[in-house]
Length: 205
Length: 205
DNA sequence: ACCTGAACACCGTTCAAGT
DNA sequence: ACCTGAACACCGTTCAAGT
Image (tube, rainbow over all chains, first blue to last red; front, top):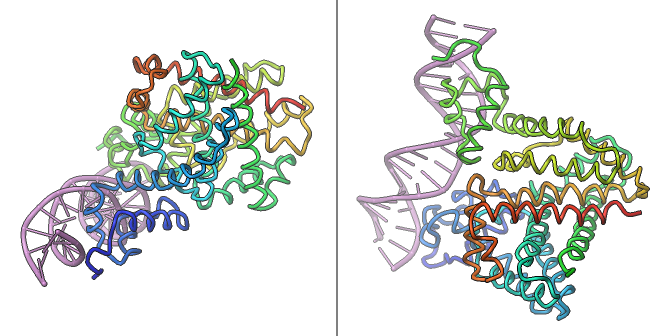
């Protein structure tokens, strides 16, 4: 049905990302994806050994955006770490359903490069060598963890969070739950504030 | 096959939790669970409208442990919030595969009670009313998010994290990745330190 | 009333068959 | 060499049938 060789790993990954962006991770099946591409679903196995490998490629796809931002990050270690963390957050904010792909990855080249870079920044700040692993992990768990939690259920995460705020019945949450937009800005403000708190903790000697 | 009325919602939930504890969330299917219970898998529908409802009940099951600890929490607001957060963490540490159940829940009575309690603690500390929602969310995203990230892939999460530390090739991570036990204690130490950082940030005026 | 069994519409994955 | 089609072993869910 489809033109020969019109399928490539890149084309498939982009279609997969577009699908989860608009319909969520649950809607990603080989059959629906094949339909999006106008190809028989079994032909996807020519480019990916299995679904897990496709999902890992989707994660790499979002990491590519981050790498561009990292190149422009400032030199001062703390500002640099914050900048990298925010770049991750922005990438996931653009494709919230992709938080579900963090699961699958064993650790990619790009992620090791970032880990190495941040490790060096921490060392430059005078963090004792034996504390670096724990400090790094505080950052990693926070950035990925908070994003996972915030974006869970994408693309309906804002609707869900808003509903939860509303049905709590607490007056303190009525402003935040006014609209999906206000939920989103509260989300992002809370993330940035939490990141600053974590940064203060991990960058001290 | 099974004795009449031997099945109850509680029995099913406990069997489901036992299964995910030892074999992980992926292994939880109605068919395997029915086999564990010696019952036909379709008979589970007599107690839960669907699988999602069963998973919500599993989440409530872990919240029950937390409630006991909350009753014993100190009165001083900051210590109290820390104590509640650590109670959550401990409950999830006991059943790491249950982090996957956080997804499904819309917000349960128990969770609203905790939200209300923490909201009052923040108010007692003099946090401005209009900031409470954001502060609360910093805590919620941190506690659930970091735990989700740390325990992802349970019950093999320690093996995976250890592998990732090892294959990073960074000398700073060799001590942490010595054994699964050391990975675990680094995990928990990082969580506690991050929690303290978040607490400082959210409890200030 | 409670449990079983067959059936349905979906999955991911494999592999022989077409061109 | 590349794509298709049929088949397989699984899912969650529904519902008529047994007792």
